[in-house]
Image (tube, rainbow, N blue to C red; front, side, top):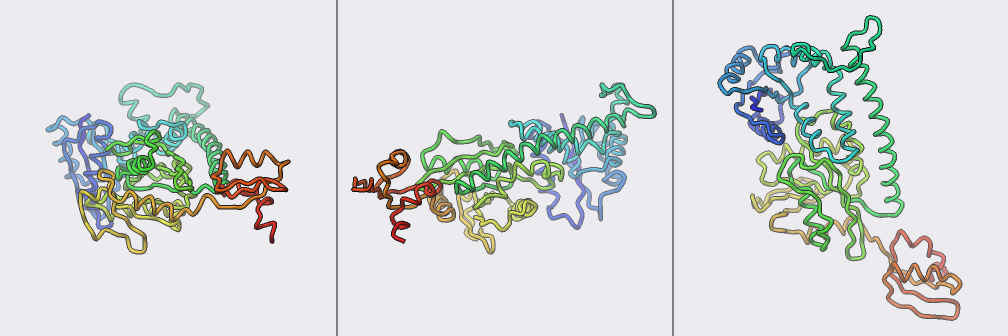
Length: 420
């Protein structure tokens, strides 16, 4: 596919048009669409009928012929009427930024959960556009519907809408069941007092690479995850249990964010992102080398705000620092650390920072286990670090380092509690 990219910029845009079009080009190339030409126009607001002005539409038509393009991609989400009008004018396939992102997510989905979430987002996007799709198929001489049992006065478009609504309801029920399962898992972790550390950031900022650097640092390379220099390389949320220096935590790698992420997609992926909402500590991974670093930080912070996660303690990790060496990088009011997955700069400091924020996962206790409670002695000797073990008159004495999550069952045998 050869595409022409089209953008409208207004005085209210937080991104400049060059950045926005460059990102749109990267998104297109992520699914092997070649971008042969770019057109932009500054307007007070996008044209309500055709998104872009009449003169620019003529320019696009000339560019389509000149570059033999067979697709036009618009940088914003178009209304159904805008899409209908530009499709009629340009006579080639027209898609918008939202649909492009949905297509990328659709190709990259690997888990049942992410597949369901993308299907839901796509159906929510398609629902108000059913009549437009029907018109396209009619012009091509085909039909998509296998449903022929329409009622009196019911059009094929009505049937399509009813079919999509039915699928939306079904997907929501499946996702609700998965949501309850995931929340139960999170609650179990909380009960076991295992802290959650979440990696968040703009797409391709280096979250997965950061997770792998941490795993490599503690000699757990066998648990490393996919990392690729590509937008939305993975849509899965990876969890890894980290145990180090008598502490343990769950490290979570989440999907990346991008500007103008479709609203339906954010809502559909809400439960994938609940790991962030329940985190005890957030590491916001930032691409230090990006010329649009501030805008990318703002995009991520806005998504965190929608998840009600802005009050969670956060470290701003300025990754790819080896490419910029900018000593001034920081975010006012937050902890910051310059970092490089390539050179492993400050990997030790990053790990120490995480450990300092998650608290201890073990405590030291002096226990006297009665001889008749041999099962408890067995648990201690199998799972805990024992400093001292003595056989005494009333039982076995242990000076032991014990996981907090296990301590409750030994509380009655703690000599400190007995003395009190």
